[in-house]
Length: 226
Image (tube, rainbow, N blue to C red; front, side, top):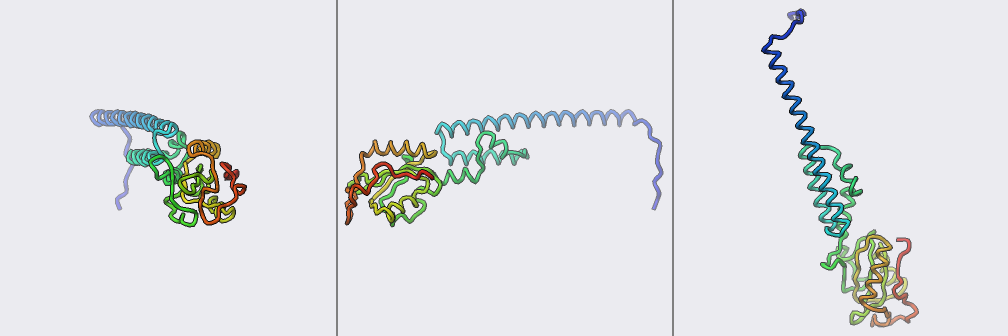
């Protein structure tokens, strides 16, 4: 193998020195442009997420639209190779994609923002038709001719109505549930439901053995711990 010998270091020829200076200057300009573009992108991304957060808070969009926005911004950040998107998102909307998806899946199916069914508890078997566990709702249960049997609020709708059916002996023919943000909002929506449908009367259930009115708890079925 040929042994390399060190050579004395001397100044570059002027043409090479000029070329090197031009390359360095071009690299600096490119770096400055990359910084400018990144700042512009992050500013636009921040403004977009702020707008999504404000629209959701104002009720202008649903969690389904928030999920779409999350996926869109994540795709933009990935395409541009800008890491840290999830942290930037949570600065405005403190929820990850899994939680947003859960909220989106929990949205009411009715156009009026409600779930409803023409069943008692025993026929309530399709989980896509009633509020999922963990979602706050206010609800009303109806007997014959659409008269209210009772009102309530909970975040465990099927479990709560099961206790009312099996444990309390309450019966109904149909029901409606409204989505709520939290227990306080659920209680407010229960009041709205009662104002809309009137005072409950368990005797209107119209089934084989109507319960004494004392066994109903008009407009007061709620889960204080849920």
